[in-house]
Amino acid sequence: MLPDIEASKSEYPSIDWTKYAKHYDQMCNHNPSYWEMINSVLTAIGTLNLPESSRILDIGAGTGNLLFSLAKERNDLSLFHLDFDRGMNELASAKYNSLGQKNTVEIVACAVEEANFPDNHFDVITTTNALYATSEPQKVLSTAYDWIKPGGQLVIVDFGRPQNVNDWAWYMAKTSLVTQGIAPTIKLFRENWEVARQNKITAEAQDSGNYWLHNTSEFKIALEKSGFIVNKLDQCYRGYSDIAVCSKPH
Image (cartoon, rainbow, N blue to C red):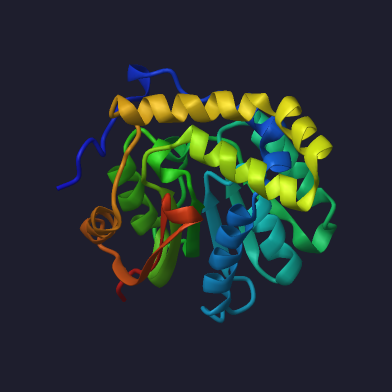
């Protein structure tokens, strides 16, 4: 059973992603668990041995950290960044432009629910901690299934457990104190209070049942319900998220 997987965006105040974007990367750069998660996705993609010109779509691509990292490793892939938020897309565009013409990433500026890609179009689709915040997670998974070629792959991370703002604050503070010291840590939190405010909105939306909460088993059920074969499944992001590598049958 998938409790509250389908929610209407109109039912709750959503995160202001543009405000979030202004501080997102700075906080991520001080969050080792974030980069462990990104590297886990990159490692999973690397094991697929993709040929040149393979198409990869990142759903909810945000500030572009995943595709930027991937483009630096493989400049022979066709990469597509899908995100509706202007602030996120502007930051991502600056990163992609710094790579030069050989690493062009196409930005598609719309919500996943509004995107219109052909069926059987992508070799790989990725999405990292974005599905839970969509209005219809199960429908998004089914749409991703349609967009992936037979034999293609879905590499997905999703934030399924309740957001504990205090837990994350302590984790970030302890990490920063060890690596940066007291003064830089105080500065980090003073300059990025907006992240905590937006994270609190996430927690409230989860508490009210408007953002999809799931354990690892429920996540697997949702993936299989959409038709995917789940080849690998684990927890990541300090246990808050699940990571899965799935395939679409031939």
